[in-house]
Length: 364
Image (cartoon, rainbow, N blue to C red):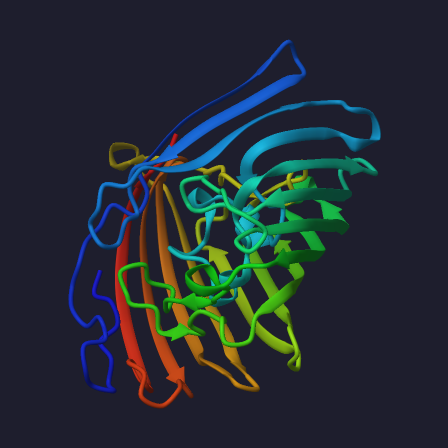
């Protein structure tokens, strides 16, 4: 990876680097046809080169609980955002789009989800207690945050087992925040390259405490045989104590094309995208080379409103994916990033950046 050769001067992460982005091991299963469990740990992804082990998923649950469907309790992802609920193993690009900064990701809690109308309609609803990246959360009323998160998705158009589809979704999360000081709320994001620095950053919002946050996301996705489109608009409305509310937001849109004829595989149970089924695998002796996908994305993030000057970031990304086998692929992304309107005196300030990065991925 060559993260962000920036034009605004200073030490902005210009250079070359490598990392183990993700190295995970997990166990999951179902007992007695109804009791489910998952335990997963992360051993990679520490940008500073540490050896921290993070708890990713550890939950148990029950299937077929009446109209509730499946009920789970433990440390898991909050059901929020199509791109977030699509596993990193199956993303079109190496990193999620810029608006993913608002996603609540994994926390301790209880949730339920179910599908109706032959999988054409799905709901998910849960309550969570915010934790750190290792799944730990403890403290008094001034350091806690509780979330109520819901997601409603539908398939108004579905043909050929998902080769042709339209997906629509609405997400909402109310976050009861009461943190301050070193634990105060903040939003910060890299330019879709994990080795790069965080180029937009609100800093800790402790000068004017935030009492609550309302998160909103709209989802759109469509398959038309080998063509795939996806877009989300995401926003965070901050309810500040004794001050005007603040709206921070972002949007992305992407398109991809399997030039070898495959299509993105939609999973109705979770309303997300899963593993791509290949028409042929890598076997040069037989004259087959796997599958090839090309894609492009634009994304924008605005962390400026009123007195909050976190910055604005605009990315244009091009990607190529080579699937040798269904669980082995090589990825290459080029990102042109434009940083705008960062607060005066902060580093980095303004400028353009360019990233070329590759990934070799095996999953099981």
